[in-house]
Image (cartoon, rainbow, N blue to C red; front, side, top):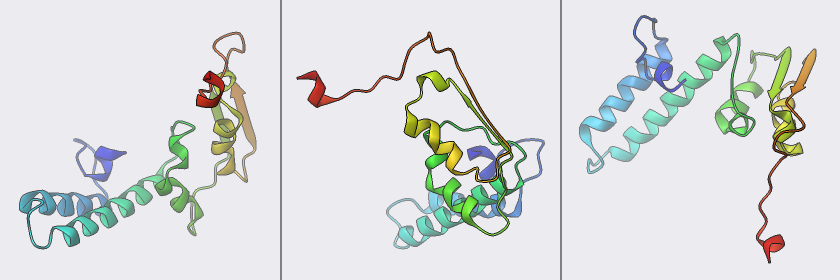
Length: 136
């Protein structure tokens, strides 16, 4: 996703949003952090990058993500916009190792899912939780 959003994949035509993100990124790098208008360039870049990410997610047929990274704001914001993709299936790998909140996170984005598949070996490593209070 990162390289697509910066129009940096060879052999694939970039989206208009990716071209804007690349242009904003290069402008920000060219002037450097000491430039007077660096903060405005940084805001312009982050805005363009968010638009490029949203465009990529809206166009995707399949999205692979970890249970934790699916909670990132960019995915959440895109999926709440009008015209957002609706997931028909959610597949969670290594479900035996996931805590309940981790396993539920991807499902929260799939209100219209027709199938939710959890798979993993329950005899492998179970979820590991570290607690400072319990270690004393």
